[in-house]
Length: 614
Image (cartoon, rainbow, N blue to C red; front, side, top):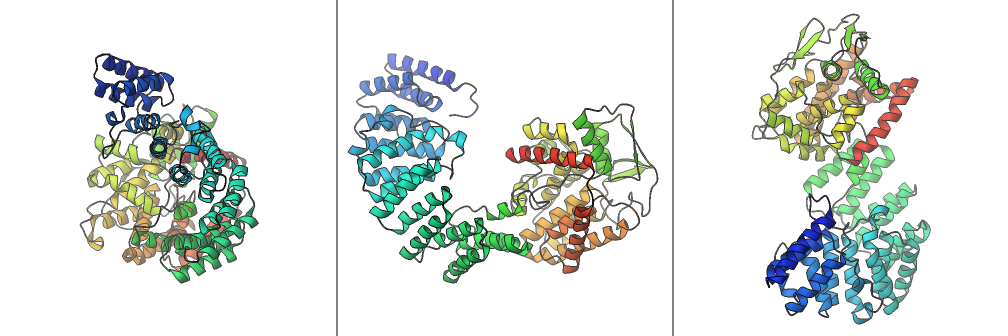
């Protein structure tokens, strides 16, 4: 269905009316164009197919009115498919419908009588039917989410009729099994795959059978089938990776890694084995080195056999590896509580033990400007002062009052960050790549965005954060701005670059959420460039050590986050890793107050919503 359509049927009726006018005027070419539009909006609408039949009758079949150029419109492809079937070429028509389904699987392209006719497969070559089913499988998820399966039912009916017509064709049985498995007909998939393996003993038949057993929860039989596939073709290392993944999913990590090692012994650069191996080794011992090595391999081998999700799977929902941790400051928790309870902020006062990070104070002021905040004391060392001399300062203080020290960003910069910022990402290299959209912003705009984060955008993400945790939006903006700094003036060598100098200033400036964001950007740079790893590891370790020392005398609200960042740093010094783990273990051992537990449950629910919209 074309984008930007509110009522597909109404749009189809409009296109159909124009097509009928063109038919009445004898303008067959324009009639065909409008019918292609109508069928794209409503692929099973009977009136559209009636008009298509009229066009065919008046044009000698009409197939040539729907040419397949280099980038054909999907409606043109589907209309041509139906006309080919009507002209006695249903095999050609099925192949075009399968192509349309691969492009837009959510549309009911095949939901027409001729595709589901029981007699159709008997007139077609079973090899061709198998190819059509495999083409459909190649364009849909495995498995297809249950709400998205209905448009694929016609292909399952086609598969049933095809198997009935060609019951001993092994390739067709296997392809039918693959389709059935994807759309949830698991019992049928097992039956067809088993029959296919008996009719055509081969590696592919055993792989299909193994996958069917695995979907049915019959793990032992699945592994036996996959091992037979290896016996058929010991050089197909993708099956080794499948066996390893299946074993790992059932807690047999050592045996799984044995299969990975067998594959790598044959080909040390085989991408499926490398990705699976690093994921499983990380799962076994939790060492970040496996993920960094995987990222290095992916960067050095951009032409892998297919897209892999192992790195994203390992980083998902982990602090800094896959998401921004929520703020822990008193003002942030107070703001979340007031939003959750609807408690008004007018005329109320919030007492603090001391000044909290300026970004937190500004976020509170922007969201609840009538809430009065007061600090009992200003403990030493003064949190309003940078931890080292810096050249770029974001904040200026008048007593306990904090204001930005940089001009506000331009409107184009605001729009850019509102489109890009998000509290989650697949993994650090993916975050780096996405931030390239900020590469053209001037430094003043980037610094302005850090101190003047814009309001959340009017999107589902923005509305969710506004209702539940505006501080997470501010932190997200600051993270992506610092990632954007990595793309600033990339022609400058790293050692003398503006981007390095500014990020280090932000890291060692006033203790703030920007401290965390800057360190994450530096950590991401280390993931992307091995040559900067030693420096980033040293800076991260020193920043954590400084925060630990300060925490002996006053609260350091970013301390836990800095510990997570050190754990995410490639080649971090062992002593810094030990310190980070000790800090986090102490945090985990502390009793959690009921209010924090309630927020934890709220945050979990909110996070599930955010990641669905990521």
